[in-house]
Image (cartoon, rainbow, N blue to C red; front, side):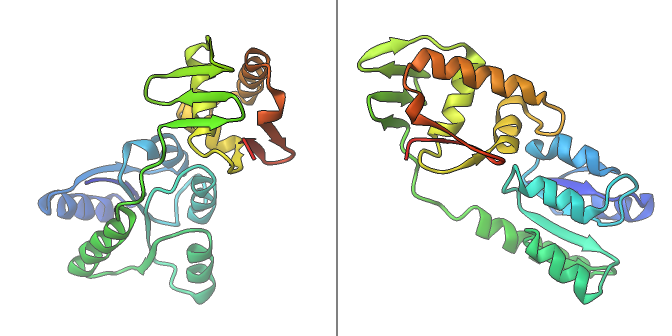
Length: 219
């Protein structure tokens, strides 16, 4: 399993990296919160220290949860009740206070990933809203039976919405999924591509703007 370790203490990071590697995982260590937000898509689980030099770990967790369901285990020296409650409410899957026994840490990691990988009902790969049909596998869009040509990015934006048809999707989620990083992507690019998609589909009612949040494909 690919474990992203966010830890600014070299000694702690070295010991954890070695232990993870010895137990069959593939650890990658970063020191800064911004690095977590840039690299989270390359990991299966995040081990997050809260005392990072650039961003508070709880802020990193809040930003990450806006765009990703990546399993997160907080591993920190902050053991006060307020920090624990905030961490769990912001979306941490588990919260451990240093020092922690290695066997317990590994067991918690296994438990979190087991919950996260429980098979779910597969999402439909062809989505239809009114007379707009999006084939996610073939990367094909038809309106009223006629094929509509979209650019690569236009299709990726539409596909990200179609895969969650009927569900509100935040701007941050869209930018993270399509451009790879919600916090570096140019927000204006999303607006331009959505405008183009709406124009090409000719069905403005199927793409709803949710003011202050994001967009929804279908009802």
